Length: 201
Image 1 (cartoon, rainbow, N blue to C red):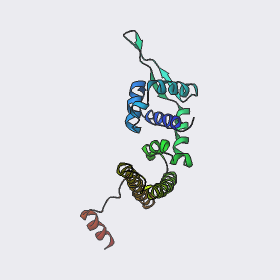
Image 2 (image 1 turned 90 degrees about the horizontal axis):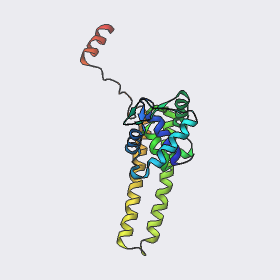
Image 3 (image 1 turned 180 degrees about the vertical axis):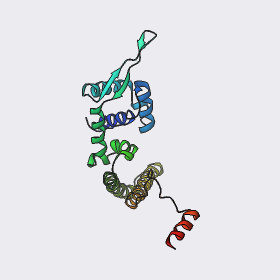
């Protein structure tokens, strides 16, 4: 599986880490997580779930029949947890792609700091290359495009610039140990300061 298939597998394994879910709930949560909307059809979702079950990553359970039909629930297995841990720890070039970066970032809390920094730096490098191409394209076509096409190109450049800035801020935070989700170091209270002074004296 590549691209969106891996992203979908990783998203579902991540969502199943803490709870058993039905197909409808999984689709809703994956859509909310990745923003795919109409692209994630049941025709895409269920074949992926069945393949993951065949690979031993999921168990399919039918807890009871409602109206003559049982709702299948999906539970992650030990093999599925291992598969998710491998996917989360992969920081190679595919993790920088548009398809996979979002899902990696959604589960960054489960990756270690070196992996997060590697993915963020790779993504930034790729965005900087894209930004350079966008700027060159806008410069070359400025005399031959209408105002709306030029505005669209300008939007692309500005969007890439914003993401590069955002990635740089996140990389700095990771290196400084102040990344989102990390517990902040508590500031010493006046009481603590007084007690430490008494101990020293």
